[in-house]
Length: 289
Image (cartoon, rainbow, N blue to C red):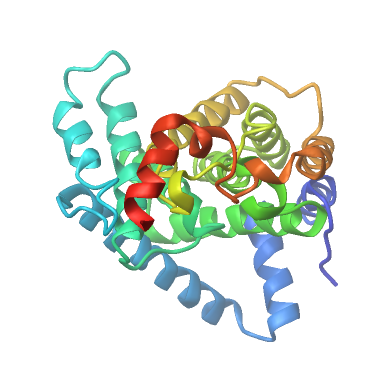
């Protein structure tokens, strides 16, 4: 029976079975949900279609959120993409991630991957990579199963919730999931996937969840853009042969301990961090007076 409770076990199962990480996750899903591989793939493909719709809507969005705090910035960045320092591909990815997050802010349909607050990171990074490589839809679906496996391990051993572990738990997990998916898409080894997860997550440890006025908008929308690019860099490092000194499972354990140690003021309560700045408090007062 397929079983894994850690990144190390996921990698070991893939190595011993001479299969990909995505296949291990698919087998686990089949055994636990009693659904065929074909049905599992249909469900994941549906998720990808929702992601694509959100990406497309986000890149055209000019609608402001009800609060007025966000909306239209993804379109601005996308229009600027050919003039920036970081290059067209990077800026397109950041714009795409922001766009999906803006769709969430206007109550559009997204896939919580792993959460609504981090919904733009995986689809934007994966879409950019798939377009660059001309990937087939079934390869994208495989990559999403790999991402899902990473998310399952994090949720089992730490948390994906900002209210529990800060934004390191939400966007940090999404970064690890995205990096893993990109390595899978590029044909990297299970070991490379583990290194990509560790590299992505360890550099976001301690990230506060401090939404202004308690809304998933500031700094969340722009943060999605930054972290989608962060995930791509982690994947590139792993594919280049760069290894994380600290294994992925120990990074996840550290994230859990840091999350527990964080004060509640920076765990989605909007009582600290950016939410407690002069401007943040003025915006909250204006919105909820």
